[in-house]
Image (cartoon, rainbow, N blue to C red; front, side):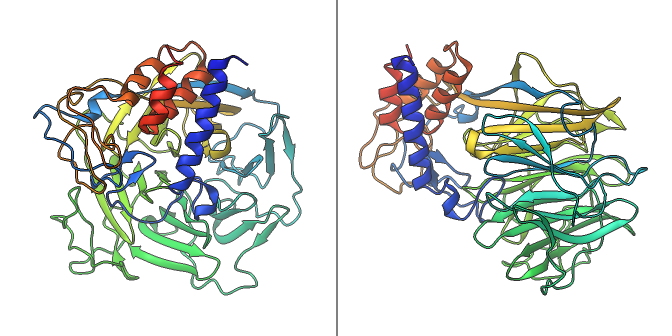
Length: 497
């Protein structure tokens, strides 16, 4: 291995250690598409979060009026075909996948006409890449449009779906077999049977998941529920939005003009306010605890709105610039290394939208169209799409457009930080805990400061990373730049020329 690549890998390991100290590792109580609630300002892994306070570095100087840090960000991605159709599960859509420690778990999928599948498949992610079919003994009934999420390295949680009927059953994969999670334990009153809902993990320590929306026997719903091993099912908020029953906040955090503001905590029966929908996409940032939900179908048309859940309260987010069109049947996952919510595919008016990729950067509250290098999967919706934290990659299986797919793809994503109007406009922060007024977020060194006009070493490194010819080197380099640690960036930039 070259000295440059060795150093790249070494700094990547250092960055992983740095992020682990800030709560990115599995033992912090959140993994994968999860996280505890909160959008408060904090310096996570060197990034400034939404509220704008920094834990390292003091108050930054005032930058010019045209300074927008989001202008310096671009996102690129590379797809890789891992398995063609026919080498594992049959082609299917409305399928669910969940990343475990060494395997990708796949369950169900198919068509509503056939009642879907009850097959459980595993794809080895350790290098001995191949599919294997699990035992059907004690499997949930055949279905599609269910929701599945990994709750730790060995287990996964499944709820609902559409087969010969709509299901309201709750299942756990325990690493060996499926178990009905509410058969022998008190789970409380479960949500109504449904399909086309979304499910994310918010707290690994408590095995707490959050479910929202879908279609039940009465129609489209807009409620939100949580489940944990200790408490069972609990309704966070409902579709009923009568005046005074609760509500949502707007993008600035205040009360919406159409719903009353809910109090902190969002007691059972409060109005969710985001509007009933199904076939929407949702994911969570494990570091900030922000859960995002995008799009879906309300029974009449596709939607394009973006919503955030903090604690038990939903609010709609708005952003300037380009953003994904209205769609349903798309997929979203949080890429922890790049600190991006990545959205793929979907349908509109029954037709596949495009093969486009979008990324939402929560620290600057902006969408970015992702530049894709090399080959792409065929356009599709209703595929399984998840983040594999251990290997810092996204995985996608199946889906449908003009036909149904049974292929498996990996996706590498890199976030690039170039120069913007903010660079050199003002000095970076000094002492710890200061609130920035401009300049580079999170760039201030502890107890010190960077004089105005001096280049940020992480910006320099980000520019250099884009010139590396090796995809793996480029991704490792860019992830190090995204860590925003000045010493790491300075040391690595010397070997990136």
